Image 1 (tube, rainbow, N blue to C red):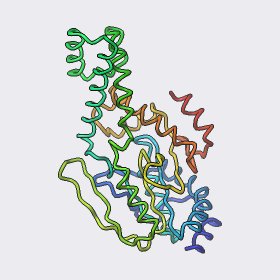
Image 2 (cartoon, rainbow, N blue to C red; image 1 turned 180 degrees about the vertical axis):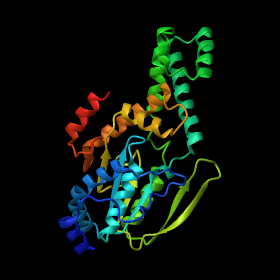
Image 3 (cartoon, rainbow, N blue to C red; image 1 turned 45 degrees about the vertical axis):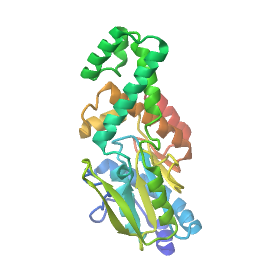
Length: 313
């Protein structure tokens, strides 16, 4: 492996994958690799390989990489390409999807997010002294319409600002936290991989309550575990040697989701709030990223990333 990696550092050049790309392990995930993904992966690999060489030397031949960023930015595709390119050079790599490790399936998690926002909002409204019978009636109508998170509604209902602020604070205490994501289970997997275990049971989670099972994965010839996940830079599931951030602003993330028709209500004010909160978590992790790749496919510094996020709000 050492010789293969050294040779790759000296000779690797960007190219389309030689064969079929083995994608991540999220059941039903739609991974469509295009020229943009190949181009970005081609930017990442030359910078990644020397860093990876050092990690493998220091960690008894195994390393953990994460590919993280906003929803729809291409994490699955680029992580799969990185794994493919590593295997081409003789380095065993496996792509694990962090989307297998929430505590609830998407439908139930979406409902829990909304419940937390609305419960927190009502409690905040009560604490502000602005709750009333009229507010209750208005909220019921806004809930039915799904517009209670819309800032424009505060023009007609000024008291709604207190509701939205408190609801957002409650939601921020849930998104990307232990109550939403099972970081502990994933941490155990990372630790077992680092310890050199050759077979590990990995969780599979679909979009329905009965789509839950485990597969035993052979890691005997795997040198690199690649975790692709929105929360891959959080540091909540153990040590990641090389976090790679794929940059996108909230506006770009919404456009990605719209293009993919990923979820109903992509354009809703509530979804926008969720994306903004997740974006803050991603930005907090940016300074610790080993590599940051801009939407244009260029390697940028944390300061350049910060400036791009501020300009893109």
